[in-house]
Length: 612
Image (cartoon, rainbow, N blue to C red; front, side, top):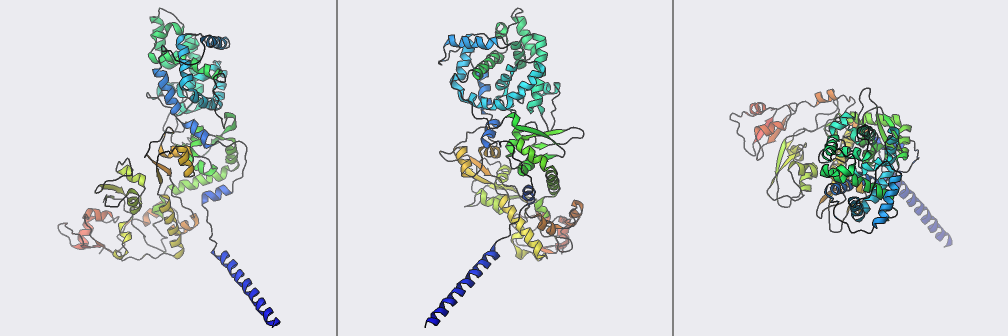
């Protein structure tokens, strides 16, 4: 009896052991093979050198926001210096502080009621703006001070950039003045700032500041007074000269002020008020916001081959908006390479270290991407190797029209034609996602409507199993990635809460939706994720397309559909022209000839021979 029980226990133990081994084996067998893209494989091989603090998205948002620029510009143009502002600041105390500023400055700073009114107006309405501007100044002021020291220009003129552009290198006025120092096109050219399709050096902090410094030096040699230099910077030296004549030859800004253009009358007081608030911000409870990056935490590297900000952002794991901020002079988000002209890229020092340590790999990746761009990925994936397959699918780039039916929405229509919702809205000039029943929508699609109806096709494509799997995998990736994710703003939403909800940043949301401020309207549709189609498994795709990657040889393979014999059933709305467009290389005359059509009339349901 005991022996029998022991036998049962031993049997049970072995059964459990075998079962556990089977489960373990099954676990091993079902683990999927994770394939990584060429981009990931390049990044995984990078040497990591962490040197400086990374610039965060909050800092990017502040630096790229234009709301302060808009507010200050409006204030300077509309402020009335004759209107008394109710703000706690004793006049006697203000006079003492202005006198202290005057003693250590080459500017003639003296108290007047108009200056007091502007200072009080800024304190009352713009304290928060100045808190943000002081954080920005930690990045830009060292650049200004270095350039002014070289030309013996007063360092206080750095505050002029606050008045001109609110320290935003991308600021553009209604008249077209651009950059931190708001140079017009002609003035920029006069001071040797390069302006072409790729580059606008009016937005380059270093070069534009050097040009501004040169201008200040030249105007001081003419007027001999720094307030008049500032007035000439705003309205031009001609207006200052006319104001001097109209005042009877007086040469003090305050004596000729009433003879200057209206905007210039408030310009110099706004500059002095800005200087006052920066000098006495602690006394007024203005606490500068945290500056995450300073100019000395960045560095430059010369670029040898043309590359885009998108490629750099992907390789260096940093927001594209950060590269735009640090390199504002590149208009198309591309660092170009001209023969004999060096171009530089400014990055945080930790990213510079990564770039320099892996320079060859980065340039190899950029060259690889340039080759991929020469042939649209979707088009390439329609073709199999010459020795093993024929043309898989004919590309139809003809314009299509779709009539909205009951139950339709833009997402469903876009999915049906394999297009993007954003493109669908652009083609039809739609402002919202709402679409009226019965409306005809314009659609530009590259898919073949015959592909859904396999019974209409008599052609069987012979493809190796491995090629089929590679193409199917990339097609699935394209379908998932071509759809942008959208979100409709609800009550109580703000950019911060939406960014948190979708795992993104405020700066990226603003970049995707071309927002210039943090304000969003209730019911507005925001793009919260915009994926870019990417070929993941390049080895499989390369096998599926062809061993010969020459563009010219590929084009010769995909020339005509006349090699295929096929029947086509006429649909409502078809014409001989529209049908011929579905088959590259086929003409209306061909269809008439193959089907003995005399007058060109065709009817729905009629069977046509293609290459009969």
